[in-house]
Each structure stands twice: as C-alpha cells, then as structure tokens.
Image (cartoon, rainbow, N blue to C red; front, side, top):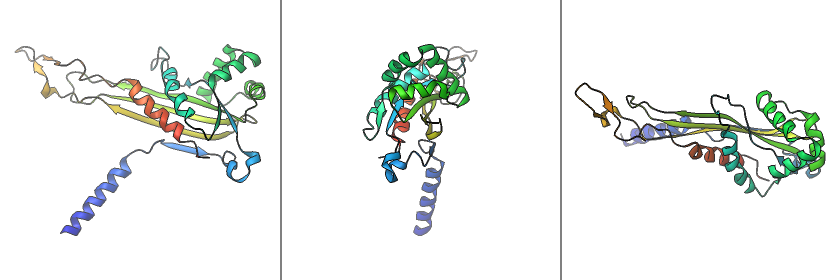
Length: 234
C-alpha cells in the first residue's frame, strides 16, 4: 500500500513538472555561434546590442511602451554576462549617426520585427564602424492583460513575450535565437466575495484592485532575465 502511494506521488510530481513551461520556451544555437570552444579564431567575439523593437499591433501597445520597458530590464540583465563582449545600444545609436540616420535605424528595426529578415545594406556599414561580429536584436511579441469583470469568477493575468536574435554581421544568418513567454496572475475575483448593493441583485466590487491584472513590469523583468541567461556560457 505504501509503495503504491509513493509511486502515485512520484507520477503526480512528474506530471506537474511536465506541464510546467520551461524558460526560455525555445532556444536555437547555430554551430557557427559555438565555434568559440573549438575554433577561437572563428568565434563570435563582439556583439552589438540593438534597440529593442516590437512586432505588436498598434491596438496591443498604442503608446509603444512595450519595447522601452523590455529594454529597461534587458540591458542590465545582459550587462551581467561578462563572458560576452557586448556593445551597448547607445554606442550602436552613435555609430548609426555616422553611417546612416535614426530614421533609417527605426525603419530597419520595425522591418526586421515584422519580416524577420535583416537588411544587410543597412547592417554592413554599421558593422564596419562598430567592428562587430554580430548584432543582437530584441523584439517584443506578446503584451497582454486579461482583466476580469466584477461579475466573473476568474483570475486576472498579465502576459509578456519577447525574442532575442543574434544575426551575423557578415551575411545576416541567424546565429542564436531565444524566445520566452511568461505571465503573472493577480488576485482571484470571486463573485462570492462581493456584496449585493441592493435587493435587486446588482453586485458591487468591495475592492477596485481585485479584478486588475498585475503591472507589465512584474512580467517583463522575468522574461528579460530569462532571455539574458539563455546565452550559452563561455
């Protein structure tokens, strides 16, 4: 009997573990990116970090806050990776002023976010100016709040997803890509916890926050740290 109970507990634990989403949710590493271990002379040494962009629809992020917020968390997370030679995004912008224009830079980032194809005519002179081997391009692709009506028995939640891609400065090939999505739930909104405002049966919400989804900051930080830690250790 004890043995059966132990087996059941182990199976239940395995089932829970299997249902949990790993973070990042996906990682791709091109063999060219990992040549640092076998062929140091062919290693990707210097990576220029570009300004975070977004593939979101305007309705999902009308004020375009998502890429700015993600960058606020991603930059310090990447700075902790001392095993990589990362060129800061403000240095990249300074180089852009020499090789092109900010307008062209903005157009490049938006085009890449939507097409997943780097414009080498834009990147080639920038790579020469920065003397870098590759570019890291962060893209926010999920930015959503599920808020709960006061009459619903449900749990509000906030969802954030982003992808970092490292492309070769030589030919634009994808050398590394990691995607992560995460969420944070708010307080459950139980109609049983609400009170009747009058005999007609109209509900009143005893607390304005019980149906509000958590702030995006709570999730964006988790996603940024996950993406930064996904780079292979060197």
